[in-house]
Image 1: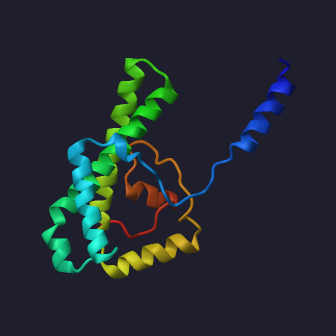
Image 2: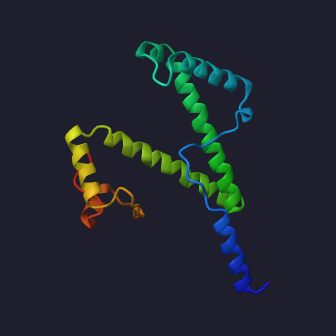
Image 3: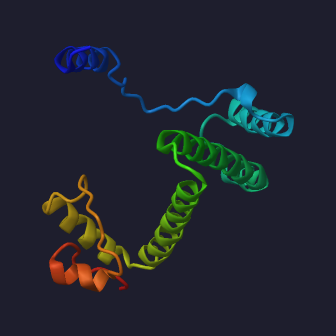
Length: 165
């Protein structure tokens, strides 16, 4: 097939397969184990009885179930992501190891960053958010240079003076 014909066919296919925007991700209930299904059934019983905002005492009494359900969903989503990325990358064991290494480090870096942000005062949080909105950075991402700290990024003008307050 000639390259221009292939490009046209791919373009037509891409147009037909445009993603449908949705605020919902669906996971097949049957993919869960029986104990996981029982856990979700317990959560649904609470929702049916109290609606989407149960009283604080009900949440407190069932916090273990609620947090475990979040954990199960979180792990399922991570497993799916790891599987899909492994298939897409199609690499060997070494490339798979590098992917896992970087993915793990991403979460560790994010965890450390969020721990620091959660210690900011309300004033610092508001100032940071205001600066991000004014500079149009809320919907932008950039590569953080290796070995950089937030202080290094401040020097480059990529981050304002809110870190660690």
